[in-house]
Length: 300
Image (tube, rainbow, N blue to C red; front, side, top):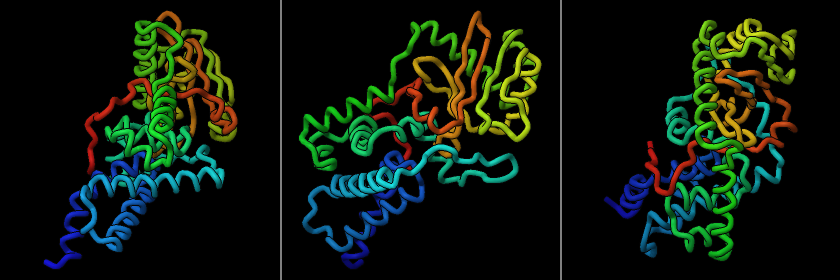
């Protein structure tokens, strides 16, 4: 085995972990693969002789590549909203990407997409992978205290601040999760049991098929309208919206809609489907179950 083959073998031993890091940073499987491949090209040009800790070197290189990608994306002012959800019968998520989405969680992908580039990189490296702050600081080209502040700001945004006590938040979450399960299953009876008799559903026009009313009133009308949208429910996940429990509809982690819900006496008294990009940007979204440092990270 010559030197190039040995270097390739050593690189392949780290590919899965590098892809896991890159995917959490850029939220796109294609871009994550591009970042990992670019890291290999840089390694092959550099050679491995002068690298004492290959895993750390590769993580730093991939992270810097991802940071450049995120900054370029921000400079182009890409619009992350309005992604059209594939309807049933088509547009399936590729298996590899589905595995990655599941391992990260749709809610976390949505919230990470709302962080600044340096915040996102610092949070992913330190809070998700336990990378020391001296290495994080080198990646983001900041001092160690500044890198700690980046991760702290990101952590606060990821975790959010509930607007109600924990026990009440848990009760609201149970209702919203039951509503989501009924919506996914098209279970009209279960929906009727979860909706208040005088429930109101409002929706931005962009969230609805042409000709569908933006406002529905009464449990039966709202339940029937919810069943009609069941294909969208498969992309939904509970999130913290403005401190309360809501839903983010996010195919492949790209935010499409947010559902805000008001829960009273164990039933949903109103809900709103927000699809307008300006309104989505203004929402305060956070993860209901924020990840901890060194949480198990699938690398497939």
